[in-house]
Image 1 (cartoon, helix red, strand yellow):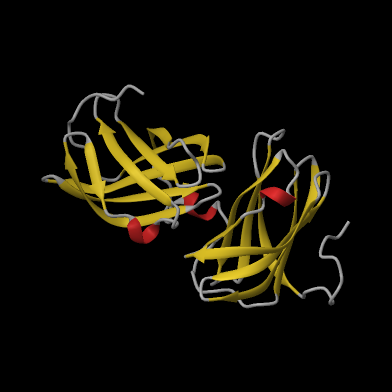
Image 2 (cartoon, rainbow, N blue to C red):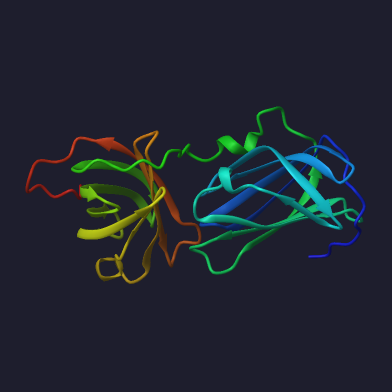
Length: 249
């Protein structure tokens, strides 16, 4: 991407762009609220499978590079690697790294009219906040169109203590999933389990996130034959009776 010029940006100006990454199409918006004498305030918001909402963050500028501490407003597996202001193009370049995606998302943001506050992109993703631990014997379920047709996804947290637990992940649709009694660990919101032995060969579970404030689970499933992954927000439901199959066909 062409990026030249190291002049300073002006205040109250917005830049927006989108690119396929972080699990699906990701839209980014940078608003430079103010800038003077090498320092300023910006907003960085994003919509997609991993929403970003960093508002009123102080930054410094050295040449093209804009540096801000965004660690407290990013999802645990997301890192903003680089933000540059290209004055000749009047554009902003943003590099974002998802720990579960090998190649960073690099997006060129073009100047746009600023949206009304709050930034419109921040509400495009289901809200997911809080990193408290889930309860044992809790079930979550949702359905969404993907993987060829309507897909019903269920997660049952069988047990959890001291950072690890056991879960079931089941789904019904054109690609059935039946992962039972799988050990998992939890780091922040992120739930990690080895599911490769119970998934269809063209299906990958790319992300499982527990949102404790909403008491919901976010699941992203990728079918190699479908260009955009299924991202589903699972609501808490009553668990089926003992011995019942959690997959609803």
